[in-house]
Amino acid sequence: MRILLAIDESPASQAAAKEVSWRLWPADSTVRVLHTVGKFVPPAQQLWYDAGGNLDQARQEIRDRFQTLAVETAKDLAEHDLKTETSIRDGEAGKTIIQEAMEWNADLTVMGSHRHGGMKRLLLGSVAQNVIDHAPCSVESAHQRQEDPHQEN
Figure 1 (tube, helix red, strand yellow):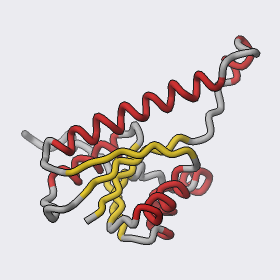
Figure 2: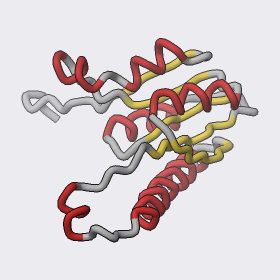
Figure 3: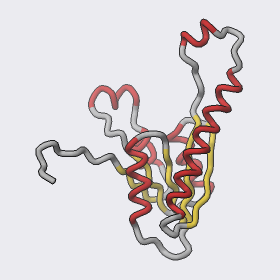
Figure 4: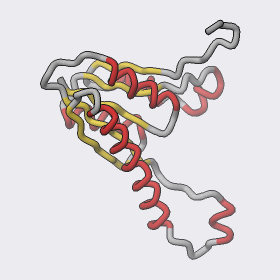
């Protein structure tokens, strides 16, 4: 089975990785940990102070940070006896995840959902919903469970 785990730096993404690690998968399963690198737009203050700045260096630092996150996630999954690999791709998250699922022939895509609602979802869209609607395979979205402050331990 080919499981595409799309990650970012969010708690929802960590929840998705945990969901994958806790399951029993067929023996020949592979988890591909994907992190997408969107268009880099530096803060306006940075552009003001660093008009001749090295945007390529900033992009590479972001890419390196995402690569480290993907490798660490893959190592964590490997500790659960899962075969893993990583992929870092440039592009808009939803489209890139769908494209990776198609090209890699994924059986399942697992990703975090930030659970935006109302106006925020209308304005920003939902990467998870886009992937669910257009992926060539089954899609699961995970979210960080909220602790109930009233629940006793």
